[in-house]
Length: 193
Picture (cartoon, rainbow, N blue to C red):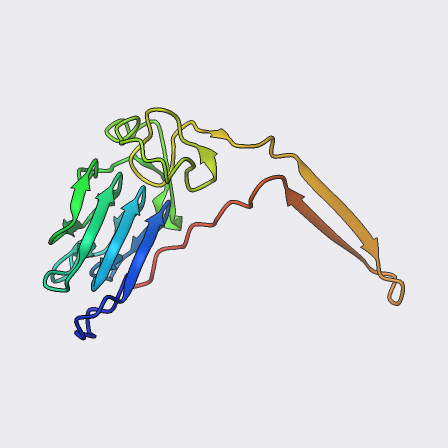
């Protein structure tokens, strides 16, 4: 959430923020991305999957009406199983159609795109603030809609560095390894109903 819709103090709650490259999976929440009393907010390249029965309003992304929102942009998002309630937001290149076969393993929260996602592959707008995808892979000149860039190339070599160090007191050995670049984020499993 960006802001607090329950606090109607007319003051801005949040400013100059970006929500990008996230997988959102839920079976029971109304809106998985919500904006209220906010200014200069960008919601780019997210994948939102609602898996359960439709809720009262069934929104995946919601910009709350009457909360003095200013300069809100919603772009290049997949919103599946739910709708969008945008109020004053500028929106473009979002996809709300069917997603059968689009995702690698939606039951476990893995919303990486498959070859079956042709309706969103290479269909996004180029957004300079989002040069990489969910896995930190570089987006190409024709970005995909959603958090995952199908067929993207890793930004770095992915070489693994590792080391081990014996503990002088116990004799046990601890190991550590790291991948060059930044570790990839993990998908969040679907919420239980």
